[in-house]
Image (cartoon, rainbow, N blue to C red; front, side, top):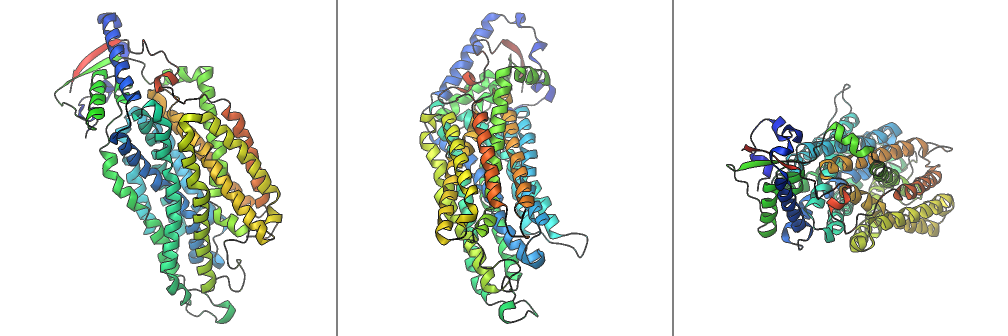
Length: 570
């Protein structure tokens, strides 16, 4: 399968030539009427199409990317503990090392979201799709094989670089997968289709925890029977960390597998008819594409056909400034961007620090850093196993069900009510968990109560703003800026993730000894404040449920096409 633009030969300036090059009067009003009618008919076919195998294929191809993204992002929460045993002083990464490992990916993701969001609108969704997955695969493989030099190169530094590169690829996945799934979907199922794509994050998080448990269990015998050369016997016995070094590399390296499987399908997915029509200004080819994928699920592009260009709004700096200078448009962009920012402060603040929180309530670790038996084989195995099991519990009880609860009602309730409900409930939950944190971790019953509330918070993140902040910017903007606007909104979220990670690293021990996690309760209260601000930003967002993408673009559609601009042979 080949997208419409793949067979185009010519100067790139011709591809995106300003429609004003040819005066409308040259062609007459009849051309405009016919082309607008043809465009509306093609869009109506997409918007009213029955659910088909092609829609399933789009969900699977786009979804496997988010599965890979989530696996690679959240596996680091367990990998960081393993890296501490291998390379940290005293068996624990320093705050600077832990921060570098965890914040590198969100920083790269922010760059990737802005970059690929813009590239997706300039060169097309298909041209960029698959490239970001190649970056993820290479960077993941690089992490698994990372090493260090005698003095000049430190393995933690190498991992930080590779995780930054991987983050760029992950960032590209957000806007491209969002707009591809929204632009191919029919109106009545668009929310469920985009949710199904994004819900693969939950499966990715769960799989990372399951693989961690499998790896830890597979190396149980080696860990329990291993002693570091020259280590003392008795309470001070130290594990031979060679086996832990194998474990984290296997856990990280598995992230290549789903990406490699999906790469071919990403490279062969067709261009969306909306991009062909509204950005490439080729209404005739787009209409043919719609007919082909709805009837056969494939595309055919005649290499000898004449490419008919039309006059339509074109992306440019001036047009971008003019569109978002309108009050309702920039308020909408601010609403989608800040809502994602506020959500990710909590989502990544918790997700990347789950072991810290579990250890803070005495759930994760068997022995505390500095204890005589902290590096003993039984303690190392027990801590890693508890962290894997704890993450599985959190995923099964909170992350995964939250996505699918959204799936069931997103096209009935709408996006805005779900997001508003989620922010309100999360505000309440974080206030309770933060205020009662110190009391809860003192007793077994309190620990269970905290785990329940923590799972509930994970549930309402996904049955709430984590899903809706992904959906809305993929629907609410015109085709020529849809990928860019989604990238801006998503990058705002990753800015929140970076702030959250820096905050956790520098504030978690305030008022207590190093590694004491003394300030965790107050950090949860701070998260409550951000959830409350998310309630306000949600009010700036318009409801997108059961509306066509063209109705949501805030532009006139009856005169969108001004006429024929010219014909260029392929």
